[in-house]
Amino acid sequence: MPSDTPHHDAAQVALAPSRLRHVSLVRRIGDRPEVGAAIGLAVVWLFFAAVGGGSGFLTARGTASYLDVATQVGIIGTTVTLLLIGGEFDLSIGSMVGFSGMIIALGVTQAGWPLWLSLLVALLFSLGYGWAVGTLVVRTGIASFIVTLGGLFLLRGATIGFSRTIANQPYIGGVRKAVGNDLLVRVFSGELIPGLNAGFAWWLGIMAVGAVVLTRTRFGNWVLAAGGSPSAARASGVPVARVKIILFMAVAASGTLLAAVQVLSIGSADSFRGQGKEFEAAITAVIGGTSLAGGAGSIIGTAIGALTLGVVRQGLFFAGVDFDWYQAVLGLMLLVAVLINQRVRTKARRG
Amino acid sequence: MSHGAAPPVIEARAIGKYFGNVVALQDVSVRVHAGEVVCLLGDNGAGKSTLIKILSGFERPDSGTIAIDGVPVNFASPRDAFASGIATVYQDLAILPEMSISRNFMLGMEPLKGIGPFRFFDEAKAGAIARVELAKIGIQVNHLNQKVGTMSGGERQSLAIARAEYRGARLLILDEPTSALGVNEAAIVLRHVIRARSHGRGVVFITHNVRHALPIGDRFVILSRGRVAGEYARADLDETTLNRLMGGGAEFDALQRELAELNAQLARADLPG
Image 1 (cartoon, rainbow over the protein chains, first blue to last red):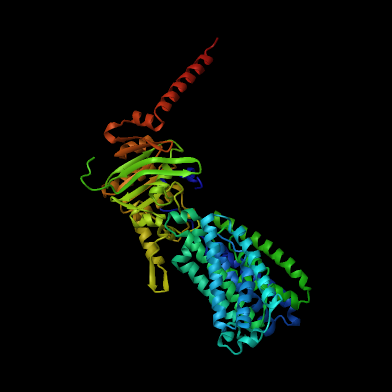
Image 2 (tube, helix red, strand yellow):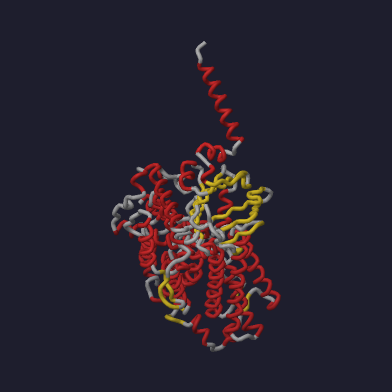
């Protein structure tokens, strides 16, 4: 408890109506972290429209290309954001994308399973993995950073190991041929417009569900409380352990969804796919105003963050900048976003 | 007080709790009847907070049992305790400063609207409940979507108490609810304790302040070093005795003597000469 009582006249405190000064609408909107992120997105978009517009950034194909990049990180970014708000972190989500993809590809090409079964097995595995990691974290109190760092290497190593043992190589091709004209192929990777597949629709759907769950449901309230103060939440009757386990499961499941989109659109599984995605997902969340300390964040903000990543990555491409610079720009953006968000938060707290 | 044949609202029997090799509680038994205020007294580290954490389901005892209305229970979490009508105001209040007043008030038991998977948090209902319950305790809030972090310390305390009153139909546990408050705010809290008692609830009241404990307590349980050092009815106590007991009896006497000696020494040192 911050001891701010001495500022008040004791007699007045308990009885007086609460003292809230009027804050203008403009100010309240400005205090929302999504707004800063949206302005940042507009700035980078305008910048790349100016420097890359002539080489195709503004075309439908160019637009599709950055929406596709945003989709890749947005699908997992949404659930990662919920987990961050719930006060935990998952470093193994990128490895889960690779592992799930490998299960799907091995299932249809080696085991001869139908596509639905391969997808189901991958999903069940990821849910089980999320449950195990979540349970380990809440039972032992070991930082999720450490537990999922173990998961990162465990899953990645197992993916490479299985792939080499079964197929003698770190990638599995021939998925398209194996699944043929399955309806599920269109469900996960059907083309919406040239250059953009059904994954984009999945992202929009997950984003909508995530935003509604966070802001309009009891579970969302529990997520905010569990991340804000686990002990206060538990004392108030929130089943904090269950909430966190469910969040870990949701993150892992979103990894399987992304894997399904990737494997079915590319037609192969690669052991190294998803590498670095765990950081990109965290970056999109932070750009969107989610606090790594837990208890606060925004799904819409993460969507804006994902779009920003997409625009920057493809913008650099259309501007003819060597791709080597992408990571450096990403790191710089993260730092700028964090500084801005911190300012906004300090201001909001002072009122 | 006479309680007829009704079993206590809550009875802790021979509770033990250990943190590593530290004995937090050993063989502690406490009972609270309906309409009774039991004051839990003792020095820092005596085990008061550990005991109420066990009574409110926050911690599990390592030995001993808890019975509600004479029936043994096994609380896995505070959520279970709420279900039995037990609510606690913790020292840290267990509220979330970043969350709105109404969301804090209904946290863990949010009212819902809608059907099946489309059940949403009923913000309007939560706000209405919070407004009514806070008014009962004398707080008028303009904006229930105001963050709790913007409230004053006294208002937060009152919010936590109003929330516990709303949930704890049978037993209210208050962990040092007056320690951070001014005179008037403390008086408001004490009035609530008396009101809760008159409504037939049991109350466990933890305090360091003899002046707060004496007027409202029906029974006084003294904890010392994780054990029950004594139990007294209101009629058997006056302020001096209670002060002595809270300070640990003999140790308190020793301290008195030491202070007297120190004063005498200082007086001698001040003498000119």
